[in-house]
Image (cartoon, rainbow, N blue to C red; front, top):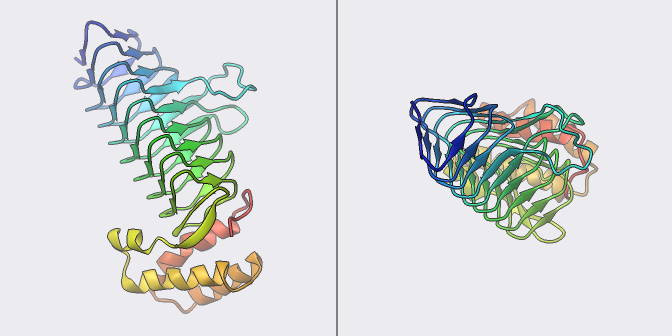
Length: 263
């Protein structure tokens, strides 16, 4: 059975894997599921309909699965779903979804959510994401795999952050940030391609070069977005597999409506 400290309160209906560790002064609600290897260090609250995968660690004063801060929320049955092997540092908050969206706040696997990071209602956060200290996602934000948000960065509700993008510290993001790019500021502005990040994640030299050229096409050649997407689609017809694999998520992102593209 799970190892639960005598000074914690775990509802009898909660579903905890046999090797879960719950430290002192924690509270776990009735509809919570905690997978194998999860650790609640101390002073952690996990409540609501919250499904947590394997190997997640919650540091003191995390608050996971509590009601949305959306004033329209009226205690409807919504949930939080968290993948595997994430780390939530001190004071992180993750709120459950609302019926105005799909009703689920979803976080992938292997993420690092540093102290006081906030994931609001109905957000969808991918795998291997880093939110540095006090980075904040508004409601309905989507964050792609391997994206990084610097400390104190804030993302407006309904914005999208593309995969492998990097948002600098204290940035104010009001529009969608395309995959692979690096930028910062208030308001957010683009700088260049996150080339170093792509190299660290195993992108070939050809793929990185392809992304750099695509960046120029979309952001530096004075094309309309429609013209830029058409140019990338034409390039994909004759590209190698590596280049096509790099361009595909970028084109898909640009073709999907959002809050407008940060250019």
